Image (cartoon, rainbow, N blue to C red; front, side, top):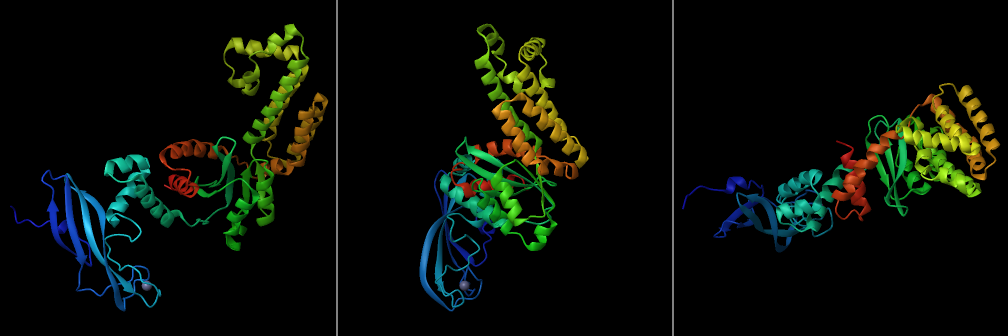
Length: 400
Ligand SMILES: [Zn+2]
């Protein structure tokens, strides 16, 4: 047997490695660690010196693999008396975190792996329980991202993301200028977003200028109550997708009114009407759409309205934009369809957020990329039912 020492590989301060045992197939190694008696024990919470020893304890913890061997350390430690914390905490050993079943360096390795692998993959790779892996990852995430970083926020994009279709939502707040996800809230209610703004100092709030979002009342209320000076901008994409729903309703009611022969023309036009006209490339589809528009004046007008709606967001002058909205609403009322009229009323009521777009030409397009990436995280963050963990993973993914 060689007399080479392996203790250099275990440079844990305040700890002495007493003995080691390696299985005959070298798949497992067991070390025994005891506190180094040359040091007075310290409290792991406050770092101060203990005034007494309460009890002797021990536990098995996993360390990084050593060659082909998985390494377990049988760690002896002491519970101490800390007059400062007024508790009986575990002594500070540098070796492991009292709440985790792995050494600190293995914990760091797990955290790094979890950035690129799923919790399950990491667990399988290291031969650990997925709950252990998740607990380690979450602990690091809490340390790094647990507190909202409000630094330098001038323009925000706020949007909801659906995590279970139509059931559960999260509110995501993005720093518009850097693309950083600043905050993830539990639902899409006003209270959630108000909590976000409440965490800001008054100086940070004053620094905020504009926020782009959907015409969603709870968000609007939260902004108006917490940061009333901030300009609300409504996002073109959201407004158009709401209008697409109106188009669909109009199409359905016109279909019901159509004669049997004309009903044939309606077939297969649902998605043609939702598409951008410029994106319809196939001559056959173009022709089909033209046929429908020739046939039905109401649908034709509604489609013109859609183009005009998008055009409103191109104005840089508030005066001209307001004129365009006025004109749009006038045309909308000529259609004489309850859904279209209702939409026009909404648009008129919320016009301030469209006019603000002249001063702040911002949109939530950035959040679309976020949404796609979140789908990937959802798959990766095994156990995303834990919303806190899921939220932290999202913030992490958009910080680096
Ligand atoms: Zn203490």
